[in-house]
Amino acid sequence: MTALPSRKIAALLRVMRFDKPIGTYLLLAPALWGLIIASSGVPTLFLLITFFVGAFVMRSAGCTTNDLTDRNLDGFVERTRDRPLVTGEISVFEAMSLLVFLLAIALWLVIQTNWLTVQLSIVGALLTIIYPFMKRITHLPQVVLGAAFSWSIPMAFAAAQNELPQGLWWLFAANLLWVVVYDTQYAMVDREDDLEVGIKSTAILFGEADTRIILLLQILCLICFVATGLSFDLGPVYYVAIAMVAGLFLRHQQLISNRSREKCFQAFNESKWIGLIVAAGLLGHFAVYPV
Image (cartoon, rainbow, N blue to C red; front, side, top):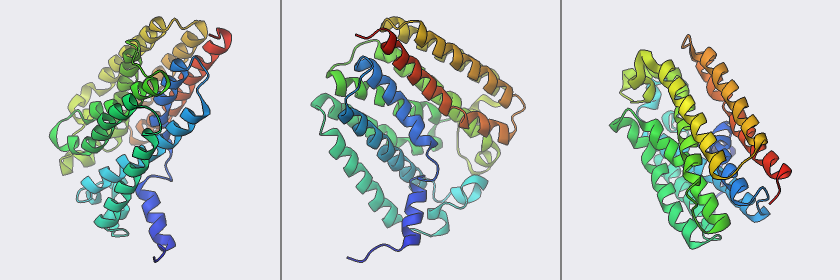
């Protein structure tokens, strides 16, 4: 079997966004929240490894699907015109092979858990695969992305407890709203290019009301975080973390107020801290109030 040349491997890693790990982090964060709550602050090493690797693999699979779907459009968008499928560095067959390989790893990971988690993983995989197509069908692809990124929360509870407590759906809703917020900020960077090539997004749908609608979504997100705390009897440390999230939301409102590409991307990029703050608040709660 002939080994792949280093340039080919580098191109495949770029398709997986190996050089841009923020997406993996944003996918991993809600899974960690779910694991921390479901495990009363002490997730098993097995589940941590499973969800860490799973987040990387599924984010890579999602990016590969996205590039396959958009290969005929990415060349017209400034930010994406150098992607390997556009430049010809890799073929469609090679990208498809990579996708099958990644999904096979994800399947192997999930069958190590339990049947409920396996069932939920089917929905998660479908959301990951259909998301790129939503940009052609609806101006709300960010909502589908939010559902895909949030699906790790019920999967985390299923893997840790083999059941789905009702309170998890507040956390699911909080994360979905957060995803719509930061991905709308991200879409604001590409809005002009997307309008030219016909890609739909919430940034286009919201138009001049974009910053106000993002503010509303941020408020709803905070309400869902509070409802999560009430559902799982979380204490003051958690609510301090949510207050810090509110502070970051206000900062992001300032950044996106002029709608400059650089500032909108900066607001998106800073979203990684929100995932960390919520995780720290949850860990802090269980450290102070161990079960």
